Structure formats: structure tokens, C-alpha cells
Length: 320
Image 1: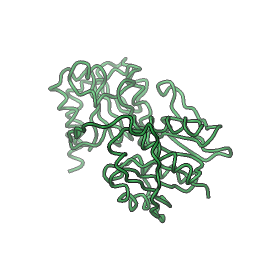
Image 2: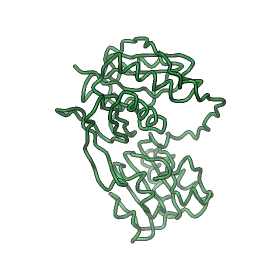
Image 3: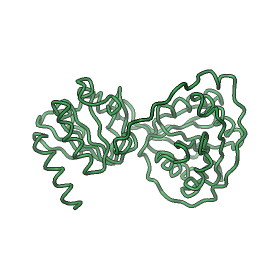
């Protein structure tokens, strides 16, 4: 059976959820071969094998931590030469898309970014994308070289599928460009105790209608009751009510959770571009004519200062 190369996103051996989703998609079109690089790469084998990876290629050279993306591109190129895959799948993060683009140029292949689904086709993998702020859905395939495809988080379920997960050390020869940009310092991300925004299954966002930074505690309380991440519209971020790192939209982060709750958000195209691929969308807004209601699965016309606390209490009571 043809092999599919999956680039592993991990932190010191802890595999992140989008990679496990990629393994689910990879099994639809072939046998997954995972590539893990950097510190702790070898420790990923157990989890990767448990989710379908027949082989796990590892490389733990210090260059992966000391420099930016080029060493990872070098490793992916070496893996492509060793495996000859029918496709290369990469998580659709900012770094992932840069790695994928550089790899596609090097190996002379086409690239598809931000896919939300993947299936086997007679002439190669067929990817589904949301285009023009998710107003259209497209299905496309790469017609030249090895398809390089980045996939958005929450595009597929995480499914256990025990496989061999045999570990093989990959020999990587680093290019001259690999050491061109050095990492001089790192600042640990402050933990909020909530899921990562782009990976969360549930996202609760607040917008201009929240009317102040102090009122985002209502949004956070609802998110915490649901085990959700907290997002914000550009208007709320520009007003200084919430950090830019939590902005959802065209100039922020794109999310595709199972459930997206928009509170006090009008639904401008800028925001819709970042959340329109969510599986179920709920809006709370006192303006019955707000554009967000054209998009949602469920809408509540009401004051968020009354609706959100009641919803939070109801969630807590049902969980209790």
C-alpha cells in the first residue's frame, strides 16, 4: 500500500492533537509514515503508532531547536526521498504552512493549504477547502509532483488505530540555508488552563457587544463551564479588551471547532473568515438584523449580559 508522510507537531515528545487528526486522514489514502524532529522525537513513537503510523522516522539534531524552519524542511525533503510518499501532510499552523511551501518549491510539487477534508482519488488525494471567507467549498488535487497538503485543526476525528510504529532514525544533511536564522531567545507562553484556540473543540468568543475588558469575565466563565477556549473579535482586540493572540478572524486566527459561540459579535466578513468552517455556530446578539444570524445554526436574540450568565448556570447545573 502507498505511504503517506505526516509531519509531526510535538513539544518535547508530547504529540499535539492536529497531528493525530492528520494520521486519521492519512489512513484514508495510504499507510501513514510519521516524521518527528527535534528534542523528544523518539518519545513520540508510542502515541503515533497507537494512531496508525506504521513507521516513525526520527531526527533529533540540535539544529531543529537552534534555528528556524529550514532544518525541518531539510528533514522533510530527506524523508520524501527515503519514503517516496503519495502525499505529504502538515498541520496548518503558521509554521506548518511555511514548511510546506518551502518543501513544495524544493521538490517541484503543487501545494494545497488549509484543507478541511481529504479523500482518495483515482489521480491522487482530493482535498476540500473553504474559499472566499468560506462562502464556497472547493475540491482540488495536485497535478504535479508529490502533493503537499496542510490541514486545518479539527478537520478530522482522532481515532486510535494500533500499528507497528517502528522507529527509524533518519539521516538529515542540512543545507547552507539551515543555519541562516538563529533562535536567540524563547519566552514560554503563559498558560490560561484553557485549550489552545486553534485546536479547541469548543470556542466562546466575545465582540464589541461585551462593552469592556472587565465584562470578558462573562465570556471566560461560559468557556470554562464548557471546557472551551476563549476568542475575541477584532473590534474587541482593537479596543484593548482582550489579547491579540485570541483574535479570531482574517487578521487573527482561523478556528474550526465542533461548537462556536459568538457573543456580542455582529458578524462582519473579517470575523466570519476565521470561524465560518465551525461545525455548529451559535450567536447571541440583541440586534436581530446582525449579519451573524445569516450564518448561524442557532441564534439567540437577546442581551448577552442576561443570556450568557443563564447559559453558564445551565451548563454548570447539567454537568453537576
